[in-house]
Amino acid sequence: MSDFVMGLTTMGALVAALFFLRFWRESLDRLFLLFALAFSLEALNRGILGLSEPSEAGILPYTVRFLAYVAIIIAIVDKNLRTPRRR
Image (cartoon, rainbow, N blue to C red):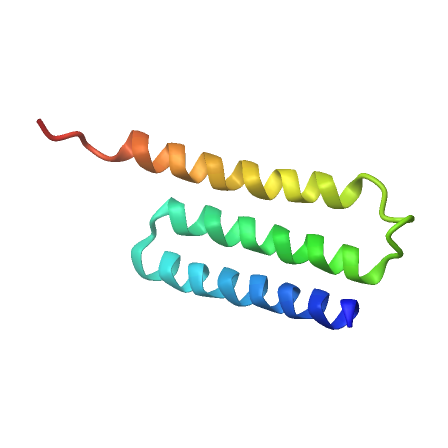
């Protein structure tokens, strides 16, 4: 059951990445590109966890997840800094 759920979350993250890639292609906004990268990394993370034994995973899944969260933070900060402020 755990492998099934891990596969579902991997697929869900890949679908989200494809949606963000489509939005990026239409708008060329870096926010969508970075979100697509983050969800791709999250899918990679889930794939690593699903294919390895929990005791053998080591630090790699946590590093990949950390990089995905950093990409999301960079996307949000970048979007807020590029948006012109109105008074």
